[in-house]
Structures are given as structure tokens and as C-alpha cells.
Image 1: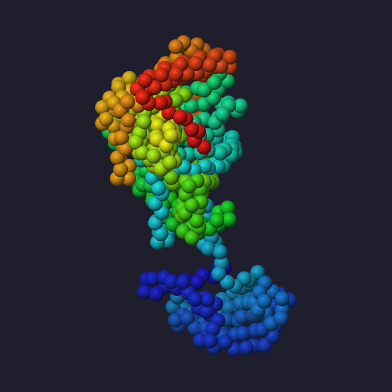
Image 2 (image 1 turned 180 degrees about the horizontal axis):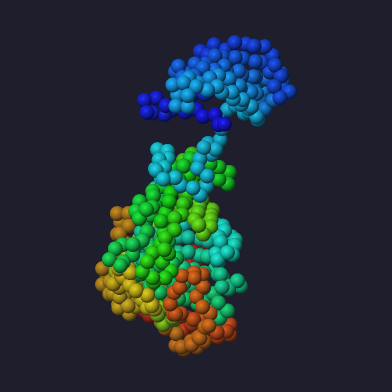
Amino acid sequence: MAVVAISLEANNSHIESVSQLFKFAKQYNETYMGVASVRGVKCNHWRACITVQNFSSYNLDYYFSVPGWKTTWQHSTVVRAVINGSRSARTPNGKHDFYHVYDFINFHPGRPDPSNFQLPEGYYCKGLKGGNKTVPKVPSVFSLEFETVLSRNISNHSLYIVSNWKEIYDFEKKLVLLKLPNWHNSIGGPVILIHDFNTGIRYNISTGKSGTVCAASLLTAKNADNWFAADAGHHHIRMKTTHDLFNTPQRNGSSPLVYKGSASVRGINADIWVGKTLMKDRTTNESHEVKYTCCHGVVLFKPNWRVMSGSQHNQHQVPVRLDWYSQRGHIVMNMFNFDAEAAETTAFDIKPCLKWDEQRFIQFGLSGKYDEYGGSRKFLLALTKTISTVANVSIIRVNGIRLQNNRGAMIVTFILLNKTKPVGGDVEVTVYSEKGLMAALDALKDSVESGKFQLKFQNKTFDAAKSSFFVGLRPTLRPRPPAHSTAKPTGNPGGGSKLKTKGVSSGAAAGISILMLAVGIGGGLLIAHVIMKRRGTSLFQYQRQE
């Protein structure tokens, strides 16, 4: 029989005090009965006569170990309680006698661990209220690394996998990057998935036996895409906010996250929120929906813990773990290196998905001192957005942007990419209306040479040098066409489209192509240097960015 410390008064319940629970205090008029032996333990014996609302009366005998007797506590410890009495006839069960014996084993006074009172992992109770705590707001941009521990049962087969991933989530740029293991090619490098919600294109970049392989397809709300994509209505999808990622919208039977309590995770004091999600199996085109319920828990650092990662030295309440439970199994995501600073656009590199003649190297001069702005990530991001707007291209097409030091002045260098032509899929994202490569190149060139190109940053204006615009020349010799690759896109069983670009068939062909490309670019830079000398300027001096 359990000892319950709950009282009901005026239709309200409350937790009783320890003296109320055990009915052992001054107001109960205990009488000392002497010394007795209980389970071989020498004890002091106390007795009290208890009457409960004229319904019952009983003797309550308590046995405490005598001082000096070694137990689980240094002082006298309760060993046994005996209840012996009768209940009146006015109760529903009529008059009856009762005799209860409670033996206390391994008694430990003091505050218990709060985790003892929490719901078991993987459970969610309907109508759960939880504590009066809301889920902390997750920044709109972040990067993190996480270890995924997967244990699932599929078709009566057990599956146990541990893998390491990296994620960059930038809601402001509408870009997501995932770096994950290459499931289909153990000797290849990791698979990189880039979701561009500006254009509605999904890139799957991997390394096969014949080189880099890229598949470009349209984003959908199916399979792995729906982790980041949310229904926007009218057969369109949108990029999920970080609130969508770490909290469950209360619709379609799902619940919001409810505070569960606190626990120690990897030696870190953390708060826990739990919720229930109702998900659809959208791997088929069948008209009916196959749904299953799963519970998940989000674990975040307690506010008094400071997290240092990257350039962020004072982060608080960042995610540390995410658990998913369902009929299919259990997934644990242990999160590390959470960094709330926006990643550079160079991280979203789709250059491997475009052919050599779909890229242009561009440079131009920009007012301002390199020493003051050359190392600023915010300045570089503002510059990237300005170039994207002027050229009317999505931000992901301004590739590898850098600021070079030209005797204290700034030189902007980057590669402008062509539009991607995805294969297959239905348009489910509002597609960004952007210019092609040559049209974008002309628009940017006209803006610079007319003196209209201006960058606004921290209440200052930076102008492009009119006569500094330069476009890298195409190689004089066309590289050898790559052989057809038989390697298939990897990393996500959710499907994609046919390969857009293929890897080089052999190392020799790759070496020849790179050599010819280097010769072509070198010749182009030499010609540019001569032209700029005649104009009274000199070509920029490169300085490596560490």
C-alpha cells in the first residue's frame, strides 16, 4: 500500500506536510511506550490515538531506531508504523476493523531528485499542464553539430545506427544546409544537402568514384524535405521558422511543448519540454493519410549555464538534446557547438552543381579601409545582399565572396553563378524571379560603371570604383567533357531528380582540365593587368584570408 500525501478540501487538493502525512507531531499527543525490537533493530516505540471526522478511530504505533544505531541516516530513523482500528457503519463499506503494517526500508530524509516526479521518457499525457514555463525563443539563424542515435524496428528487423551531422539554419536568408554521412559510398566524403527556399531548389552534392556528383530538384513537402518545409496553403510550402522546428504548432491533433521539469544531461543542468506530434506518411501518392503519434522532448540548458561556441561567448538556454519516440522506435539527437551567429554565404556552395561555362569570376573596387571592414562578417553579408539585389539573383548565386587588401583599399572578388535548372517535381515554393548569368552580369556591370552601386552599412555609404569592374575571361581551350557518371545521388532516400552535373571520369582528365583552366585565367588576368596599367591603376594585390 502506498503512502499518499494528498488532502481534499472544498473540492481542491493539496499536498500534505510531513507531519500531516505520517500523523506524527505534537498535536497528535503521542505516548512513549518504551523500547521494542523490530526486524532485529532496537527501536523507541510511540503511540497516538487518531480520530478521523467521526468515521474511524485507530491507534498509530511508530517505531524509531534508538540513537547510536547505525542506519541509512545518522539520526533516529523510522523503522515501522502500525495502524490498528475500526471504521464506522456510516461509510459505504459498513463497519469493519483494519490492521496495517508499514515497514520502512532504506529510508532517506531530504529533498528527492526532481526527476523522480517526471513523466517517464517517451510518454505524453492528455491534458498535461506542466510548469509555468514557456519554451525559450531560438534564434532565427544558427549552426550546430549533432550526434544521431537511431534505434528502430523495421519489418521485424532491428536497426541501430550512430551518425554525426552538421546543420546550418538561416531563416533570414531562407537557406538550410545539412552535412551527413554518405550512406551509399563509405569511401566517399559526406553528403551535402542545401535547401534554397528562395528559388524552391534542393541540391544533393556528394563525392562518388568518378568525382563530385550533384542532383538538383524542386523542393517538396515529402520525405526529408518536410523536416524544414511547412505547408503554406494553396499547394505551396514555406521554410519553417525556428519556433516551428523546436515547438509543435497546436493543430491536427498535435500539442504545444509543455514544461516537464529538469534533469542532468551530459552533466549539464537542463530544462525539459515535451509534446505530441501527429505526422503523415507522405512517401506515397495514395489519397488516404497514414498517421502515427510520436512524442518528443526538447532539452535546453538552464539559464544559469553559459554556452561558448564560435564567436558567441555568452549564449544561454540553447538546445542540448532532442528525443523522438514513436511506434517505429527512438531517435536521440545530442547537440553540440550551437552558434547563433549567421554563417557566411560561402558555406552554401552550389558551385559543383554548375558547369564551367556557367560561372564568371568578378572583381571591383569598393571605397573604405580594408583594415576596418575586411574582417567583418556583417559587412560581408551586407555586401552580398547588395550584389544579389543589384544583379537580381538569389543570394546563393553570389559564390565565394571575399574582400582582398589592395594597399589598404578593398577589392571585392566572387564568382557569379548561372540559374539552376532543376529536373522533376512540382513547383511548391514561390519561385524567385531572377536574371540569368549574362543578364545579371550586365546589370551589375552597369551599376558599377555608372556610379550607382552603393552599399549601406551602419549609417555609412560605400561606393564602387567606376573603372574597376573586371570579369574573368573564359578559358581559351574548352575542358574535356566529363564522362557519364553512373554514381547515384546519395544521402537521402527521399528521392531527387536525374543528375545535373557529373564527376570527371579519371584523375588525369581532371588534372588536364584544371591546368587548362588555370592557364586561361592566368592569361585573362595578365591582359587585365595591362589594361588597368594603361588606365593609370594597378591590378589588386591578393592577400590570403586566414
